[in-house]
Image (tube, rainbow, N blue to C red; front, top):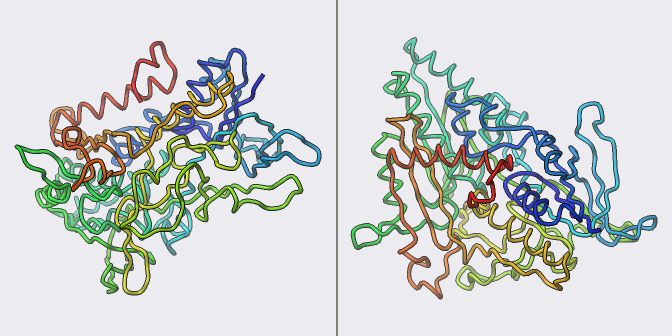
Length: 489
């Protein structure tokens, strides 16, 4: 009997666990290790952050779901990987520490035949002094919507600002990215326009100054180098698309910015041209940069080999081309296809946990040498598709295949994104975008790097309804209710 251990139960890890349990769970053991007791549909945290949804509407308990389908669930965090085994254990194993109430810190050794790293990111608030005020997403300086609890706190702060505006006190809102190497611009994009819409509904929009701040070199980069949308026989850039939305809703912007320090009511930043600036605020929602969760790796002799299987940013190395090369030499072929570690063939990484070979957006830095550019997004639809592909490969390897059998390369993969720009059944809107492929392939699609027949975007009420359908559909799928496999990734 094979044991597959999955570290993490976010979108990618839970997808892999669901399919593996369905395909091989009767004959083999599927073990899910995650520090969280609840699954969170993260895209809808945006709505929690403006008071349009509750935490209970975007989360559910994981233990009953895994118990129902027969998977083993351990509420714990993985702390180290021992891919060669150890002096007392011939099989490869990981060491985990419980996060379950009453058992916090209890250590356990867990052997595996196959290991999937789906740990996601560490929310690296400490990379920017003062971001979150030393309390992560629950700090007083800035708020976050990265978790459901963070989003609850963000809404509390937002409602306090609304009450001040109702009393005649003007408020300044600063929303975007909190570091020069952030990703998830899309989440901040959704939040700024849901905030703007919420202020309209509250009747206080005229008392608010709203500013977007981002490490993007142009509006609409979104960490994928931007895109072009086919419209009426010509290609319109996402820059034009985004600038139109910001202008129509009277939202100012500061771009190419690395926030290097946050104080109460003030953000300090450096721009791509090397100049320094300050922006005052009453309310700031700034996405933190991501890093690996800090897993260590040791060889059979107990010597540290973390650098052998993890990149410097803490993400796991997979079958990508990590050779340093100039931007002009980057290729779609650099990106991984199987998500298998090149040294240990029974270890895979999915979702945010795998180390990308390079940026997707053009690398940039200020004259002071400060990198200011978005890092690659690996969330949502790509994460789920990668999780399923790796699950299929492991299923086939358990049954005798010598190598991974399925691929999900981001340079060959399309993705759809529906970004809410205001929640309301008859007045809400959302920007619906599709991009193919996610990583541009300039050899296959000269000029723009993408196929315009499958890359398009619209904004309107229909997109908002689609966003609602996705919310309910993916929560249904994640709970493995009848027919869940019919809902696509």
